Structures are given as C-alpha cells and as structure tokens.
Length: 340
Image (cartoon, rainbow, N blue to C red; front, side, top):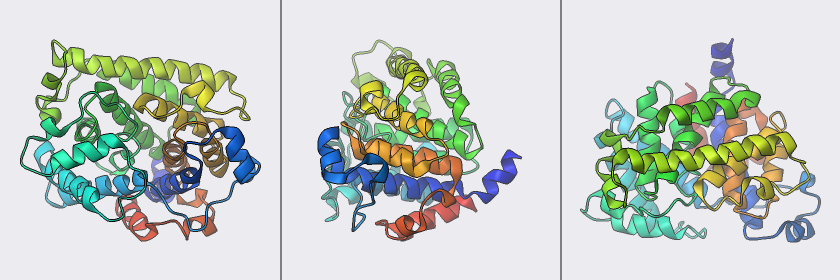
C-alpha cells in the first residue's frame, strides 16, 4: 500500500515545491514580530504568496545540494569523495553568484569563501556553528531514491559539515533528511517524532568517519564519539520538547514560543515539524502558520513545506502558487528525476 502511494504522489516534486513556497511566504516576514506580521499581512490563515514569489538562499542552496547529488550519482554510486567535489563546487558557485543577494547567513558566506581554494574542506567548516543553514537545504538527501541508510546519513551530515561543523548541525541535518525520507515512504505524521527519537538513539555514538574525515579534531572533544554525541543529545532534547509542544499547542499561538525561534539547527527542525504536525493534512495552513512566526520564518516555513510536500505529494499545493514560484523549472526537473 505504501509503495503504491509513494509512486503516484510525486513526493520529491511536492517536497521541493513546498520548500520553495514556504521560503517565499516566509521571506517578507523574517525578522518581524507576530503583531507586525499580522498588521502587514492580515489574518495569518489568509496569507497570500507574494507577487513575485521570490525565494531566499534557503531554496538556492537546496538546489545547489540537489545538483551536487545529481552530478555525483551521474558518475556512479554515491560515496564521500564522489559527492564532496560537486557539492563544494556548487557552494562556491553560489557564493560568487549575482543572485546570492537574499540576506544569506554569515556562516555560509564565510565557509563558502574558504571552500574556494585548495584547503581541506574540514578547514573551511565553521566548527562552532549550528545555524539552521545546514538543515534548511538538506531535503534532497531525503528525496533521492535507492540510498542505503549509511549513504543517506553520511550525505546529510557531509553537506552540513561543509559549512556548519557543529555536531548539532550534523545531527539535525541527518534528522531532517530522515523525516523527509520517512514521509515520502508513507510514515504517519502522528508517529514521526517517535521514529526520529529512535533513529537518534540508534545513531547517538556513530561518527561517520568515511564521510566526515577528521572534522571532529577541530573541536575540543576527546573523541569522535564524544563529538557526535553532543549533537545527538541536543537534538534528542529538542525532540522531547517538540513531543510536549505537539500535545499542548494552540494553533493560534506563535510556534516559536513552543519550539524555539529556528535560528539554530535543532530549533529549525522542531519548529518546522511543529507547524507541519499541527496541520498534517492542511499543507497551506502549515506554511502560513510557519511564515507567521516571530523567528526565522523563511527557514521554518521551508522545512514545514518540505515535510508537507513529502507527505502529501505534488498535489498538495495550489496550482496558482506552484506555477509562479521562483526557480520553478529547476525544482520540477529535480523532482521529476527523483519521482521517476
């Protein structure tokens, strides 16, 4: 039953389009308080997609990750060395692009500038940063079919580590990709938090040395296991808070008050999940709730859109919205590749 559903719902297309729509809806509301958003946009349940529907660096870097994975897999089995080079090239190209003018995060800018050269990528990684820039772009890793668990986890953490080297950024990116993947496979939203907690416990002591190399040595940790456990433990604590929030949340309340403002990786994951789980069968409402929030509205909404689209497929989104989202052609091309 699940297999039949996943072949017809176009989960990859739905997830990528949903991510971009959430990004565009949240772009004008980022850095605003909820009262100021309501004054500017009217009732949050009636928020409309801006004209034109421009996205931020969140969607731009998601596409960079998607292109990097596609290039790597065109050359053979997805493996660390095969993925690192095209990802690095995509990130450097994004750094130099004239379209990189959407208020990108400082961590990404610094790391991508350092990636433009011959140094080991681990020396470019910002080991102290767990900003949300690592997991707001990881959805493609959860959408590519045919990967093993080790490939999916390794690729999710590697794409994060190129810029955000903090162990919580790695774990949150892994969990985000895992959530997207589970939803494409027909996992029920009500059981999602439990599945993610189990996955976090299972992987708590696993350092993917093949994918990450000696990244951990840039930290003050005594071992690679100690390094990665710090990240998983912060994410497990965030998932505990999310489970409590889902039980008690009032949909009319700013989700950032319950799940965090989303500027850091584990809060972006849980705030995006909270908005999705409040409205699992109402994807547009989930996006609007995420965009009308006091934190990192575009990143929270893009994650909510990625989850909702993975769950419901391409048909989740209003045709009029989907037809005018920026980068539509490239989003549809990647989605069609992975839906096939």
